[in-house]
Length: 450
Ligand code: HEC
Ligand code: HEC
Ligand code: HEC
Figure 1 (tube, rainbow, N blue to C red):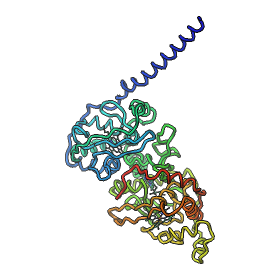
Figure 2: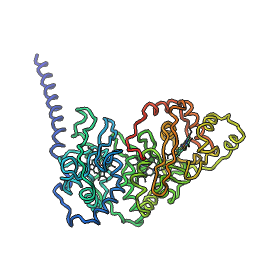
Figure 3: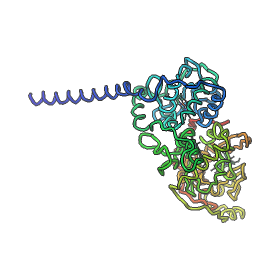
């Protein structure tokens, strides 16, 4: 009897501790989550036309439209669904409408949302808003952004959509723990510091405003980016987003940017294409909404910074091998996948795999084709793609999707053919990998570039 009372007491005590833990876990963010920055801060010096125009450009560098303008929606009125592992969250209305947008935000409210992920009510934003990268935006640029969103954008009345996440997972307080664990402190980089001011400007744009790592850096167990800055080999080493591989942007010669010149990177970001490649998937949207309108000096700085990242992967150099081209010209289609390639792909990408420069990308020596992870290849063959139309290269060439024309095995065969021809060399793709991606289409998170 005494023993029983004793164990009942232990259980009660344990329940009390757990209960207290849950209550504390909930109240700690409620009490302290709003700490950081100064919500009452206002813009010293006021807002003039010059600041508004600078803010419009900073908003392009930050690619705010990619998420805050829904396809066919009003500029910056939000409503675009972004996938999270728990369900979709929606971008909010950041037009200066007082009730449904951010018209009532002080400068301090705005700064706290953009660089710290804190809403005016002290709760945390979903990191689908890339505030861990924006923590690096300079004070001057946040001020310019505020000026632009308050005075340069037309107010739109459109209420925010609630996340498609079921209760209790939809409670926001755990996001505050995420923020405490993973978001860096506000650390505006000096845009022109260091011995190489061009690389420093590039780092500012890539690590900060451009938030390139939100797609190109692999994520850890808390879904945080494994590195937010150069200095770790994980940074920009490639990651799968939306079943596309956002490529390795480090110096590896085989599947990274090792064989690209700075001028190639500038051309890719400005026009959406180079002699050998074309932007697709999420990158088409980045080019369309953001990089095509960046200044040449900014693009140059981005390219210079990217070329400073050492290789963390395969450094083999590509050398073109003509044997497969010769066989195809002789009518020899004995290699697995050769006939599928001739029937479906060669009209555009040519039997030499060299394509037509600036029209149909080369497959020979293309890092996208040689990447270990075949997600991008499977996805583009299933769904097709359209190069974004840009100011300097307006023609939007299209590759058709083959999901209704080729079986999983035929797609695996044709991809294995291009991954082992003309000097290319990458791991085999099997039909199961194709089936998995086919089953999850269509699922793009990002507005499709027209
Ligand atoms: C990758 C997508 C993405 C990009 C790029 C992005 N945002 Fe957001 N933003 C979001 C999402 C999603 C939310 C809502 C998050 C939530 O509900 O917790 C949000 C919320 C916000 C909020 C908070 C609004 C509120 O309701 O309190 C502000 C302010 C904001 N964003 C400004 C910006 C600015 C300025 C830029 C460009 C410099 C930008 N965002 C770029 C996805 C994005
Ligand atoms: C929304 C996700 C996303 C964001 C944000 C993003 N990228 Fe990409 N990027 C991709 C995907 C997916 C690919 C692969 C498709 C392609 O080659 O266009 C890619 C490819 C590239 C390539 C071509 C690599 C190759 O080998 O063909 C470059 C260069 C590049 N990105 C640079 C950048 C820079 C610089 C930024 C930041 C300003 C950036 N990306 C931001 C998704 C993204
Ligand atoms: C009608 C012409 C056409 C046909 C046919 C075609 N493609 Fe493409 N392909 C393109 C265009 C245009 C792009 C650029 C698409 C984009 O940027 O969204 C492209 C892009 C690609 C890419 C990405 C390369 C890069 O770096 O941008 C791969 C891989 C590819 N095609 C493979 C194939 C395969 C395999 C087939 C046959 C199953 C095929 N294509 C059939 C026109 C074509």
